[in-house]
Length: 387
Image 1 (tube, helix red, strand yellow):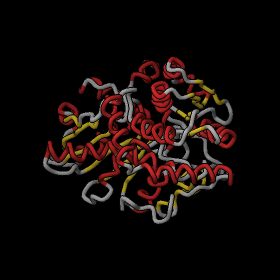
Image 2 (cartoon, rainbow, N blue to C red):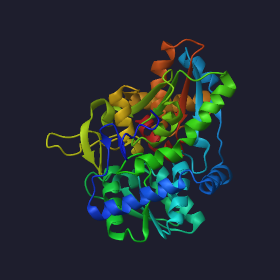
Image 3 (cartoon, rainbow, N blue to C red):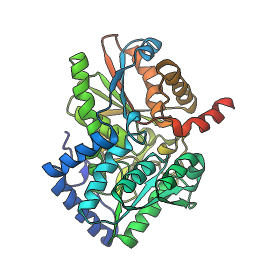
């Protein structure tokens, strides 16, 4: 089941590559290079070197004693992606893709970002590897995440504010894909989530699977058994697919994705094509992608990764929505109980754990993927909480 791609780039009926011929050619070449290098010992040695020396992996799987007592029921462990350099899981995938871009001779990197964490990670890696960097970001998100915009500029990136459409993540992806079509000869599109046309979802999963590779080994060392459930927030789906990857073939482990109630793609979505791939997508009456809203900018996306769409429809994973109030409560609770200020994105997973943990016994185990830290969200959370 881990290699569920029945034909290249498909997860059941989802995935594929619905793009213009000139872009298809570029993506086919990218897929070929990815296949060539993904298991190449020298490539993987370099990837692991930077994960250790630059990102700071492996990060801990910490027992959340106080949160466990607060929620009651199952033991809760936190996978600490917030401790990575740049403060989120995004850097794992960025390092992998930028090493691939280097081998392909690219001189210019482009990326999209919503919450800014992928943009910061990309700008950071481009700075270290001496690459030209352009980041597309929705105008609304540049306002919500002004601190991350400054970070990216400080790191030498050019920020393009996109005011088309809703001025959010979907619109930033549109512009980045347009740039790639125009400049594919010297440009590498470093896509940040497990979405997009093939090979992006497969590539992102490959580089993010380090999360579950570590957590699986860590929980066996600590508890001598697998967890009963793994919980992760889903926006485009990169941290969740990384957190799930090494458990997909373990039927005893429940895989639980959590999404915002106003952008609940997996709860209310229907099969459709967006950004060159087929997935569950929120559509309006005219069949266009529906406007979405989340207090977490990284979750403002009307689609979802194709593998998540497959895991949902096949029944292997379950997906649940939480509301703004539940997220803000979880954001504050994790800070007060465990001394960890999570990203608003990650607080969605903490919020759902409050519902799940009491349903389980004290000898059962939940792993929550803390996908990022909340520095970027403190001002926004302050404004919402004071209101």
